Each structure stands twice: as C-alpha cells, then as structure tokens.
Image 1 (tube, helix red, strand yellow):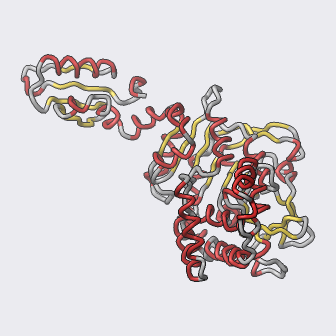
Image 2 (image 1 turned 180 degrees about the vertical axis):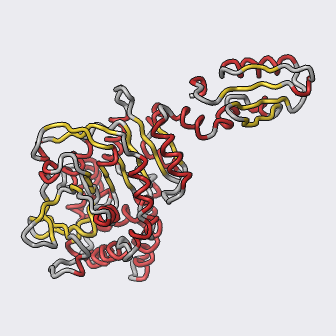
Image 3 (image 1 turned 120 degrees about the vertical axis):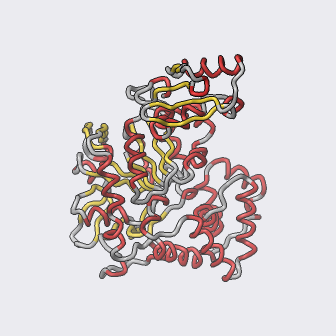
Length: 437
C-alpha cells in the first residue's frame, strides 16, 4: 500500500502546509483578526499542538458555531466547556465568510498548473515501477458491496490525505482506471459517492482520499465529485460554500464520509506500507498504522517512510515507535525524480529490518557504529570491494586491540596479520552478512 501526504505533491509545484499556514495567518491579520489568530496560535503551542493551517482552520470553524464544534470534538471537550461555562464562549458567525475565502484559497493553491503532471509524470512512473511484482492481500467487505479477498500489487492501493488531484490526473494521463468510491452519473462531468464502486473494481487500482478533495462537493444530501476543474464545467457549485475538505481536527471518526473511507483503509492487511511526505498528525490514521505494524505475521509488516525529515516525523506515531524501530525504514530524501531515492526504495522493499537496510545502503557506517566512540577515534575505516577494512590509526595497546578484535569477530570478520606491523588490519564482510542486519 502507498500512503501519500503533502510532501508527495510538492514536486508538482504545490505549496507546503507551512506555506498555507503563513497565507492564512497573513489573511487573518489583513482582515483585522490578528488578536484572534495570536490567541489560537498561543493556545496550540501551550498544549503542544502544531500551529499549522489545519489546526487554525478547525478552530475557526468551531468558533463560528461553538456548540457544534464542541459536539464534534468529543466528550472531554464537552465536559471542559461545561466547567468553564459554555456561555463564555462567544459565537463568531462572521468567520463564515472568512472560512469560505479560505476554502477558495485552498482550491487555488491545490490546483495543479496545466502541463505539470505531464512534465513530472516520471516521479509516479518510477514509483509504480519499483513496486512491480510485489503483491499483498486486498480485503473487500459489505461496505464495498462484495465480501472477498483478492491478491493485488502493493501499488494498487493508494491512500492520501491530500486535497489535490495529482493522482487522478496522472492516471488519466496514463489511461488507467482507478476506483475512488464515486460512480458515474447521467451527467458526464460528475460522479456520485458510492462505496460499492470499490467492489465493482476489486483488483483495479484504488484511491482512498481521507481528507476530501478540491473536486468534491456536498449538494444537499449528496456528495459529488467532478471529473475536471469544477470552475470549467456547467455546474452550479460554490467552492467557498460546498467544497468538501475536512482538516485533521474536524473529522470525528463517526462522521461520514470520512468514516467509510477510513474503514476501507483500516481493513486492508498490508505487509508493506510506503508512506511519502506524511506528517503523522492524523491520530486515527496513526492508530491504524500502529495496529498493523504490531502484527506478528510472517513476513512481519514493514513501514517505509520517505521524507527529508523521516527520523523526526515518525515521532508523530507516539512512544511505541521505539519498540517497533526495526520495522520502520527511514529514507531521508525528498520525493523527486532522482535515482538515489528509487534505488534506496528498492533496497528498503528487499530489506527485512532497519539494520539490514542501513547495512546495504551504508555498510561502512553500519560497521563503524558498532565500535564505541573511543575506539572509532583510534581506527580508520575504508570500504574495499565487499569488505570494510579497519586499520589502527595509532598504536593500539593490548586492551584496545582485544576490544576491537572482539567486535570484528562478532561481526563475522577477522584479523589479517602481515609481516609489516604497519600493514596489519581487520576486515568485516558486508555482502550478505546476517550479523550486520
């Protein structure tokens, strides 16, 4: 399964979440709401929450209708509100116009420029190429209209929290059908929400959009999706009023259609999850990932995280990450069309653990880190063919020699004596060495 976050769309010229946050804050100040935005930012920081676009947006929606905002936020929020006095929470209907403008802003900033997908298609081409030949089980339930399991390629299930339509446009470009939970209607330019559409395409590529889309709209009791830029179609919809996006804090798990999309995602028994550019901020999504990652099946589930800050973003999964360290492979690269990224991704797919991946990507560093820092300062390390050559850079007394020899032997290596004491060295094999994994 492939999971795409905002970092996966940056390559198509879209703004990051931080860019969107700056625009929103600036817009609020221009409109005379500087004091409000400062209070929101201060409250988020006080309780360790990320002061970003989605959290600010969610707070403004709740302030527009506090009672509804409290109900959506759950039991604890309701209790706190009752204790501090619900009447003290002022209603701000004037934020409705502001939020409508923000939805228009999201629409504009998440719209991909014409020709951009064609120019950058190779990034998706290479992603789907590298996962070819690797299958997983797909589960279909009553929600999809069919109850069965099918074998599909791991790239055939794409989950995303992005509002943009990069995935849809790419598949249109390569003329590949995707199931997205929307069925065709009599109007050729719109589709209507129907989760059984997944069941009609049991082995096709699926797209599961968890946070809505700039092409999805609510029309009364119906949820529709356009097949092109809605502003170019003969369709009466208001981007500012009807566009369906639901930021991270605003979608309780029981709210539709989030619940059904989330359930279909959560039910999939993946063994490999490739996460690209996702910040691990959606708690229900994190719970679903952790539940699968803890399975003791064979092969054990594996999480591959592609992000320039992979080591730090996975902390969003919570304290249990440390216990699952060997099942999480971090590729600290941006999602761009560079051979280095896809070479590392191929190795990650082949590796059984984080240690094995590190050894294959950087065998020299993997061997070096097994030595205490004190010993590292006394030795030199060099990669030569299928060995790491370790030479004393200064004279080793007997104690340090024995310590170094012990570590080398633990790693399946040996000491190579020569007649010339200056040329004696240790060596550790790196090719298919299970002791490095």
